[in-house]
Image (cartoon, rainbow, N blue to C red; front, side):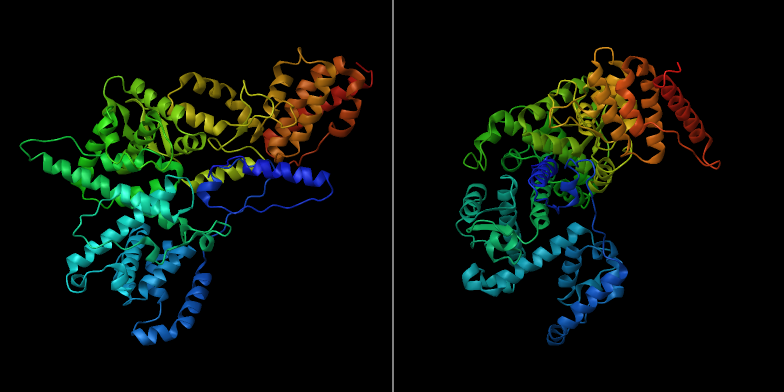
Length: 596
């Protein structure tokens, strides 16, 4: 999540080892959300693990029922029923959620009692609540579980809520520090700084007693001892989203009560500020998605009030009061400006999540909405670390419309990965997918994702950059994905093509021949139709330079310039391109043979 250039670095390592006579192959595994942010070197092979098929689910369920038969008999529950599981097919096709469904059903056949498909967040919630209750009951003396919890449902529910709050603070301990595990002593310190239990409360369940929290060396091999982690990252991400959703719902409900109060007061967002002023939630794509799913479960009137509260908090500029509360909680060093940037970005992400679709900036900021938005966006870019800024650019999609700018949720990881695969492979990338390129001011060897630049320009309301990107869009469409500056100091492929088209007068003859040599090599990576169009473009330029370059072109022409034939059944446009291609080939060879 913090190394978008990881694959490029590995490719460089492979080249070094190959030159040393010890070639290596590299396989990198990651989640979709991570793959969506990685730059794929040209020629990378990208594979996506498919979801379980019906037969694979049947095999899995058969194994589960066979292995757990004695448990079912002992507890008087039925084996996992595939017909019941079919109601939750979307979840059952993924390994983790299939396991959680099976575990959930193993107590009293809970799935049999559900008439509607489970949402992913609801599955996590019910499973974690059951896990917390079971862990609390397992050893009352060690967990501090009061005797009343056995007979009083309210006390038992309170214990579960305390346990999930403690687990959520642990999840934030990892999230705000940007890792998958965290030292146990920091978890305890964060809990003491953020949550102050009244003296008469029984101590909450320690997250370490939850079955989903384990020593980090068990969950992520190679982690140093003394650190804690979740058995799967998505559980921590869900708990982050859960705590944010609970706090947002509490703010909205408090505002609804305040509307009936004699002395209304502004919303108290001190705890929310402490949690959300270090890292944008978009640092993990799963958190905004799970947050949106949790917020959809709120009552319509609470959601409506929450939109108003979030808008008010976002427009607020004085954070001194919020800064004073929880002042001891500082998981990472951060300036006042950086914290305000992270917090305002998170408020915007929450606003998009609760809207579920477009957020009109004019409704949010009123007159001068675009200028106000531009100030926020530039604050985010100036204060957030580059990877967090890039993640935010992917999470917020700013679009113009008849009523002004609107903000939408960003593309899903699946769509982004599809685009990244296209950019990594042969042929042009679809419109809007990530494209690699060297910026006009970038030094040789620099890398710029033109897809990210376009999204960034939209987020910043940077109309000058948008006009520039619009000007180079035809080049991207014709050439496709790789317009990346070379690490050996050579100019980017995009720079090379623009030189052939417009800047050949300034290039010396050897540089021009080298540019053609490389351009013909680039054509080999394209699909047949695109390769033909690209060849016609190159031959059209080469024909104009043949008299100037003369004998220097003979080796290049021998390797790359030859007539082609197409089937009579080919499309008329392809036949016309082939005719033009062959016309240029004949003319170039005639010039080099001295007949012109």
